Every structure is written in structure tokens, then in C-alpha cells.
Image (tube, rainbow, N blue to C red; front, side, top):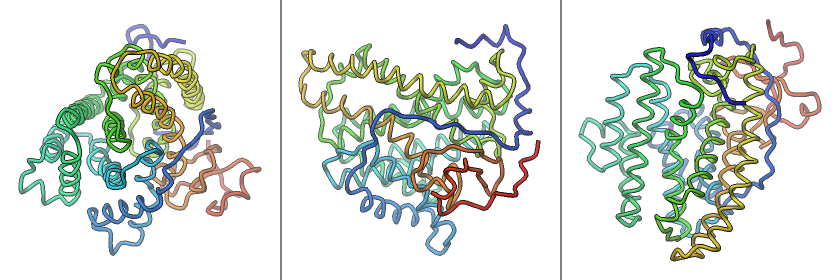
Length: 384
């Protein structure tokens, strides 16, 4: 069902979300198989060590545990399970880590002026022209170094695409901060379009080309069939991230999210729980659409007259790894449900999620014995 325009709808106050104490997260099925690079453990150790040094966590046991359990390199190993070059894969895992160095400050920012300044710092580092003051920030120094390393690995036209994607990402991050500061909620459709641009997914796929030793004809990426599947992939990823980061977003007072705006704007949705359920349903809708589009794109790649057809087919074959891998990574990462949370085993997330800094989770009874890190919640009161 299409959502109405803001002009025709009486909006519910987003501030109501500050009173949400818990919500039930239903299962999020995925019919696509999860694949992972066979050397993920080795690559993760190398990238984690690099990131811990950049964040100066060597003498901070809690910080190190949180960093390791965030499993940032694992995301890249899910998305690029067929990477060939070890050097390229390690660089990709470090890049996956570095995105949190530059993206998280945008997520946490509420001041537009500071967001614009951070954008300048990040793009100078990405371009290989950081100032001496920029390099005083250890994470920016590490980010600049990995970006320069990636530039050396890529052909000039490929790196130009890589950088264009970063400029677009930074612009959309600043726009989201502007909306938060000025209390200017976008429509759900506008939000989703903007959100797709600030996921830093396109750079990951450009890196995938490098790691898989592929040469992709730029004209293929301009096909309507490719653009449709690309948009669907990004929308799936955006809603997955927004649904599985609800707890963190509400704790931080960030309500301009997909579930938050659906709650605010959908005329038939009265409670936040209904917005969560709607959002989970939309994830499944996007997956079904992706599968149909993937079949069409595969046929197109087989029939097309583009050069390097075998590379195109390998690239298209790899696209489903993003849908399944991104979802599964969100289960495994401590970024969303805390250190030593019960989902770190990879069990699909479902149960009652508490909006609480210590992140106690109430699981369905049949799941409780499967999770060694489960906090005792038998006598927990959920509140209203």
C-alpha cells in the first residue's frame, strides 16, 4: 500500500517514540543462502587489529571486545565470498571497518554546521589531501591511509567511480542531519531514496569487482534492469538496518528512520509495534522483488553483447550475497544488540527487544536454551 503525502495526512508526533519501552521483533525470513569467504577469520583478525590500533583501544579490554564483536570485517566477507586476491580482501575488510570511522559521527550528529565540517574532513582524507589537523584524528589518519592504498589497487576510472560514490554518500548524510536539526521530516519515499544513498554500498561493490578480478562494462551498470535491482537491493538493506537498529536509534533520540516515519505517516498504523511489523513485511516484499529482478538481469547478462560477458555473469551471480549477507551480519554484530548479546551465535533475531542501555532481550521460550549469553529475564517487568 502506498503511503500518503505529508500534505494529506495528520501526522503523529515522532516524540511519542521516546516513550517506547519495548517492541516485539518478529522473525525476518530470508530465502537466499548465506555465503562467506572461507578465510574470513584470518582477514577479520588482521582488520580488527588494524582498527583497534586506529581507535587506540589496545589497553581497553571492554572497547576491544566491543570492536571485535562488531564484526565489521565479516560484513565484507559475506558480501564478497568469492574474492580472489588476499591483499585486496584484507584491504576491503579494513575499508569495511573504516566506514564506521567516518559514518558513525554523521549518525550521531545533530548540528548541521558540525556535520558540514566533518564532511570536509572526511572527503579531504578520502582524496588523499588531509590537513595536518585532520591527521591528528587517529581514525581519520587510518581512513586516509586505506583510501590511498585502495587508489593504488584500482584503475583510475574505477577509483573515480569509487570517489563519486563517497561524495554522494557525504551529501546525503549532511541532508539527514539538516532534517533532524530543523525537525523537517521527509516522506517515507523521500527518506528511503536518501537512505539508499548513505549506505556506502556502492563502494563495497566497486571493491568487489577488484577483489573478484572482474572488469565490468560501465554501460551494463546503466541498464534499466540493473538500476531496478540496484535500487531494490539498497531499499532492502536500508530497511533491514533501520529495523535492526531501532533500539539504538530510539535510545539516541533518532526518529527519522523507516519504522519511525511509517509510524508517523501511515494513516492505518496506530502503534509503533504496527510500524515494526509493517517494516518487516516490507523487507520480505523487497526480497521477493529482488529475486524476480535477478532472474531478469541474469537473462539479460547472458544475452547481451557487452564485453567480458563471463565477468558480468559472475558479478550478477554475486548480487544475492548482499541481500542474505547483510541481513545475517546484522544478527551477528554487537553494534545493534550489545556486547555478548544472545544473537551473536547467528540465530535469527526475534523476541521482545527492550529499549534499555544494557540491552536485555526477552526471547521466545523455545529459543532460550540456545543462547549462552542470555541475560536472566524471567522476572523482568516490561512496563507499559
